[in-house]
Length: 265
Length: 292
Ligand SMILES: Nc1ncnc2c1ncn2[C@@H]1O[C@H](COP(=O)(O)OP(=O)(O)O)[C@@H](O)[C@H]1O
Ligand SMILES: [Mg+2]
Image 1 (cartoon, rainbow over the protein chains, first blue to last red):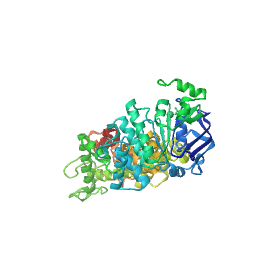
Image 2: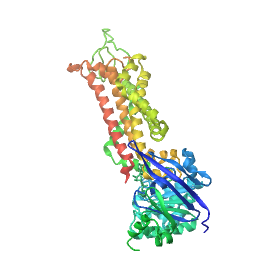
Image 3: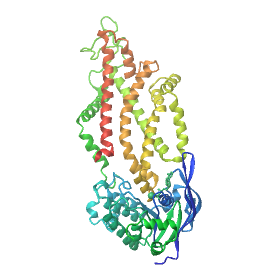
Image 4: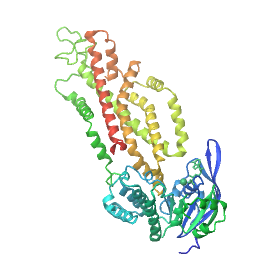
């Protein structure tokens, strides 16, 4: 896997929010490179701004927030400058897709799971009717839902948390994105399920040639999926390197304190 | 939603069918509406505007109590109440249905735009505030006063203000549901806005709109009665529940003539209660949250 070529380049990004008349700076001059084919984990404690960063990459900042300065270069475009919804429609799903933390709320409770995956296929791959359905079943199976055909007509509440997260992942994959952003995809799941989902992501990365941006506050999880780790603290990347470098030779004091909180190292 | 097997409408209809009381009212209204449409063509019907005169004496047959000749009696100038009441019901229901359709169609469109298109939010809010801050009654009175009395004037005056409530309610629902995480998730997987509105938000609006629409019908009739009461209603040559009730109002203290108020008031009550019951039951049935 060649790591030489950055696919996504974030330079000096500043994101601000307006809260009750006050302006707060949540991302404070963050720079980061995401290389093609790698799996990069962003770690940092809650409130560091990880989710804000993820949402900015896909044009989904809450409406009281904005990109104040900096650039996000993807395929020669500066997506930090995107304003119109139409610009984003070219990126969302087909270039960059995202998996959320909470698989229950990320699925529409009124639609069958099959439908929600099919929707993405109709939208992005242009299949219709029966073809779309067959594709959806394929993707669901790929995401580890073995009896996808039988579960096709089930509603989200009829599935377990782990299964739901597989559906969410399948819906994202159905768009055939180049970059998959996973914002704490296993935090809401219990540990054994967590491990299965992480394994699944590893497998899918190979299979779909994905570049993964993996967000977590849990270094233990990160060690399992990531090639590279970027440590985020108060809206900045304080240290980045390979998993080995970060775990065995941390330099930043914040990284050291994060590691010291880890129970099994 | 419909093309890919999601059974929203089936679930709705199934839930509605379980409610026997509302089914009864629905059947009642169906029969009622068919009846008022075909009533003029039934045998032995009289004309609502002819003044009936006694053949032998040449006197007007005024204030005849309900009987074999005049099934609902006659009014104070000798017109047939049976014919007038059904003619009036037709007029009033026509006004009610047109107004209800308009209110909800326009209210839905403006409400969705208001809730989803951020650029237009301020403009629509301003228009809403301006119209909403004038009491509806005053707008109704002003318009009814300046225009020629008639069915179209009546409809027009009510349509000017009628969409406000619906638009506000629709907007609130759109704003709430638009930002549900699954809609954001769907949006960032590249689903365009119109598709999210159509597939994910409209189902939540159906229940509210149906309730609004069924209540708009009796409410419009109520406004018609009110406008008539303050002297801005339809001319007497166009019977309506409003002017019938208004005419009958004078006899509330005369027991032998009270039928002239009671019968149209009864018809109004039946319509109001029926639509209310149907609307409520359908709103419950069509609320997607009640399907599970
Ligand atoms: N819509 C918002 N308005 C104001 N502040 C926000 C908003 N969204 C996030 N923040 C702030 O940004 C910071 C980072 O949040 P977030 O990215 O969710 O953290 P995390 O790293 O846990 O994902 C938090 O301090 C939060 O208060
Ligand atoms: Mg977060």
